[in-house]
Image (cartoon, rainbow, N blue to C red; front, side, top):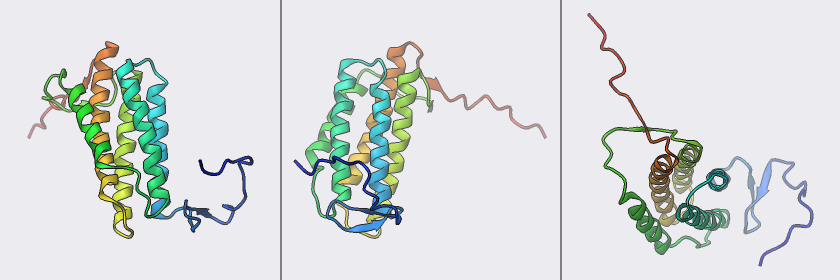
Length: 187
């Protein structure tokens, strides 16, 4: 196992830089730090879902995702590291298909809501989309394995489906966008 921190503050970042996993120092607002920082934020958002009353299958899925996200953060923090694989993406797809099988087909857009667990899951989904955008930005300037982007893309889809499952399980139901609520302007 890697280094253990006995002292949390090091003061090495007081100059606006941070150390990557390979020892390289970069600006704290670098594209790479933004990418793995947003993956870390996503992991925390999923922790908020896990803090709610949810079914065991959703809990197991999201706990595995948290481990994957920690791996992904490591991959992004250590240039050249490989942690996320096609099998991880395949697992997300299989899990997504399983959760989606019992849901009715979408006929309308869904608004974030549907109870606390579902709303937290929608927040995680939007943070996931931002993490994906940050990683795509990183690919414009540095080498990033395509599996990182693919994993986040599938994960955002899975989080959307899990939010639907949680909304229905809570009894609140899904909040549908009422596109016809606006009256047409009169001439």
